[in-house]
Length: 230
Image (cartoon, one colour):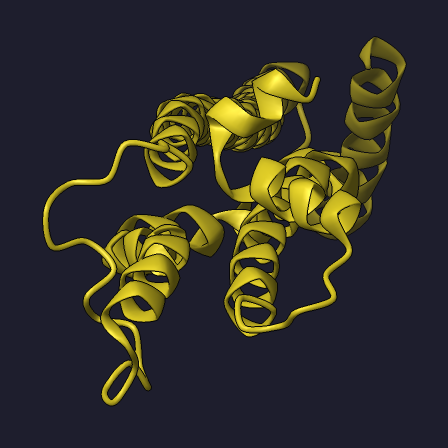
C-alpha cells in the first residue's frame, strides 16, 4: 500500500511539472497538494475497506443465521417426526391393550353363555319357541321342546354372539391371523350344539336309533351328559 502511494506521488509530481511548469511546482506546493490527495485517497481507501469489512461481516452473519435457521428447521422437523411416531406407537399400543382387554372380557362372557346354553336344568316354558310343534302329541312335543332348549338359548344370546364375532377381523388386523383361531373354535362349538340339538329332534321319532351316536349328541348339548361320558 505504501509503495502505491509513493508511486502515485511521483506521478503527480511529474504531471504537475509538465502542466504548470517548473516555476509553479515548488516543493511546498507539491507537498501540500500531495498531502491533500493522500488524505482524500486514504479516506477513500479506509471507507472502502470499512465497506468491504461490513459487507464481509454481513455476509458471514447472513450465512450464520441461514445455517442456524436451517438447523432449527431440521431439528424441529425431526422432533415433530419423532413425536408423531411416538404418539402413533402409543395410540396403537393403547388400542391393542383396550382390544385385548375387551376380548378377554368377551371370552369370559362367551364361556358363561355356552355353560348356560348347555345347562341341563331347563326353566319352565323353555323350548316352547320350537317351530313345527303344533299337532304333536304332548309327550313328543315336550320331549322335542326339551331338545330344542340349547338352540333357543343361543337365539336369545344373538346380540352377545354378534358383538363377540364382530371383533374377529379387528383382532386379526392387530395380532395376526393366528389370533383368530379362538374365534373358529367358538364358532365350531356353537355349530356343534345346534347340529346335535337338531339331530336329536329329527331322530326323536325313529324306532331304530344309533344309541352311541345319540349319546354323543346329548354330550354336545348338555354339560352334565358330557361330564358323565368323559
